[in-house]
Length: 97
Image (tube, rainbow, N blue to C red; front, side, top):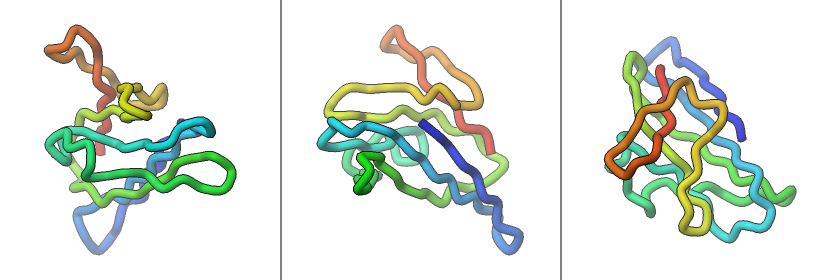
């Protein structure tokens, strides 16, 4: 898994690209505080090599909790900036921009 951040000079926005290697998966989404944990809001596109990828424009100077939803199972990114406990006795990844 990988997260890349590209800050725009002209706007207070950061382009965040999420990359998830999941060759066997049928559907991968990124859910988090930036989309009210909506499972359908940010589906990642499957590439020919089996990796799922997508880019979101997020406001910089903010912190967002997030997780991946891979075929109905929540998974954290090991490259998250931090982790925060949630009310479901597990952790969410934290993205700091």
